[in-house]
Amino acid sequence: MVSAPESLGSGALQVRLGPLTLKNPILTASGTFGYGLEFTDFVDLSRLGGLCTKGLSLQPHAGNSPPRICETPAGMLNAIGLQNVGAAVFIEEKLPRLRQLGATVIANVWGDVEEDYVAVVEALEKAEGLAAIELNISCPNVARGGMLFGNSPSATASLVRRVRAATRRPLIVKLSPNAPDLIESARAARETGADVLSLVNTFVGMAIDPETARPRLSFGTGGLSGPAIRPLAVRMVYQVARALPDTPLMGIGGIEGLTDVLEFLAAGAWAVQVGTANFKDPGVSQRIVDELEAYCSARGRSVASLIGRALSSGTAAADAGAEG
Image (cartoon, rainbow, N blue to C red; front, side, top):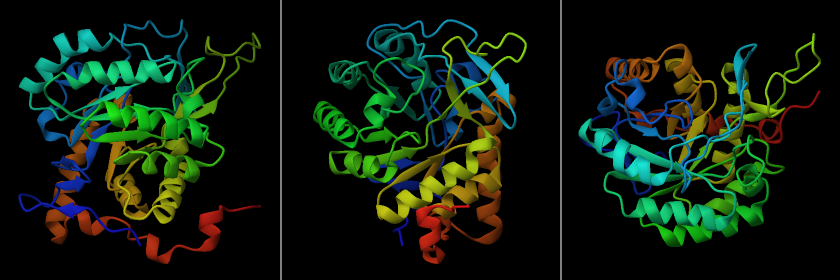
């Protein structure tokens, strides 16, 4: 049974995930919320538990050529390729405005090789107003870096160890559902310095135009996200929570409303990130905060009391995965 995170005295929604304190457990997922500033007409950023930025590299990056997104049943495929403005522009132009708006900012970072990750983290280390670093070792839409680190526990361990030495901030490692052994990858990240694990990133998928017989995305494959992946993501959170008790986890995958949040919390997530739903409803993250607040108030519950409720009733079959 996982130990629930501490619920702080100033509110039933507040949680502490290791060294990271959040006003509530609802965050927005990297790559689905821009830099946050694009959503200020729809969301009061200060109301969110946090926002994870688009993946930042040291230099600006153009990403993949279009087409880069296509809809799928109950979800979408994307192959954006980590387009971003670069760390310097983010620090100079985006971060000051985010601080003015009272946002809790988590910088998602990536690179092609270990030295790239370390360089962008060192650049961000000089910036004021960042709550944490989220290490993206799981993007499936780049030719180098990304998922190549997340698919190997030894590569994960080497990278996390180097980044841990480069930052004093809370360190989140974002895991890949495509890893051959997710639990071993999670353990490698945790043992080498990750304070929090976020899971999962997108699943590798593909869509083909039946008329042209060509992939619908220029990259060929893409990352599948949305409600279609939620049962898989919940299962993975559950398995990692059982394997690594007392490890702070953020659940990601197809979250669209309160019931989805409650499901992830029951599975062992201490917080969640809302992703693809932001494209359909730009105000969804704040709505979920309001719904969770009303839920806890009506029942006299804290968020901490909702975490890990499914773990004590888990079975060996659930741990192993169903076979048919």
